[in-house]
Length: 368
Ligand code: T4K
Image (cartoon, rainbow, N blue to C red; front, side, top):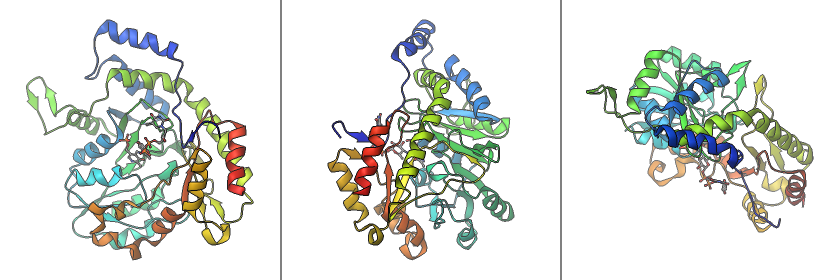
């Protein structure tokens, strides 16, 4: 490829369309702290996503950290090692011990059949990830949470707009968090959100993201500053207008990959999830070295030599990073499925603007 092709490219509105929003911000001089664009975006997103309450954040990581604070989670939390490192870092920032449980081989989400064995008297919550935007086994996980009296917080950073059984995937669990990072299907440059299900919880989250202020002179908790600003919110309002079109274009890209790669020996793709409206956020492939005749890393390098910058999302596993490797639950014997997927994965470029010629060139390299 002449120009580098990255794993993703943000969808940007026309600059001309953004100017009137900026002019409005300049005119009313409210730059942050629950300004008019922020209020408008919360309203529009709740309605667009089909969720009762949403609180906007400066980024997804602060949303995760605050979600754990909001529910007063302590002790140990069961989570997945197959995710972006922010999932586990949010536990660390709350002094919570992460307990890694293996993933299931079909979609790479937390394996519900292995959760119970990891529960101890110190367990207070489960934090699964809808990895690549594919729904976790939400009903099974909820049943376990109910039986053991555990809270359930979904890291739904990849799952903006995903529907399961006709409703938003974000309505499962006690809370779900979203990321609106530049690399996500819906972006506000940086940004994030927490979805909650009752007004009291939303209120608590909103206090926590604004230093704990519950009035001019009242602080209800040691909150943090994790508010989304007005420029971010303006970007969100614009992004919403083109979201459905973006997803449709992503769907076309994903289907082309599926078609062009279906007979390549040694390369597998995730199945399409049942009863789900996908957002096509990522397109991971898995390289079986023996069958393919080349290692994942050799293929990854070969793509790079051709100016194709896929990413090994999610390698290394979070449990392999030095700050978590010493945990008992990080031992590779307990995490064999996660190790296998992490060692085989390459996420191929996917974004609305990716054209047919590039898709064919990428798949031709994979077919060698
Ligand atoms: N939980 C999960 C499951 C997550 O995946 C994430 C974030 C979070 C929580 C935390 O949410 P945030 O706090 O980030 O809101 C990226 C993103 O930085 C990160 O947001 C994302 N997950 C993760 C999966 O991917 P990197 O280090 O791979 O990003 P980077 O900068 O290498 O970007 C990848 C490619 O995208 C670049 O090669 C080029 C392209 N790109 C990137 C940026 C930032 C652009 O074209 N424009 C851009 O502005 O982590």
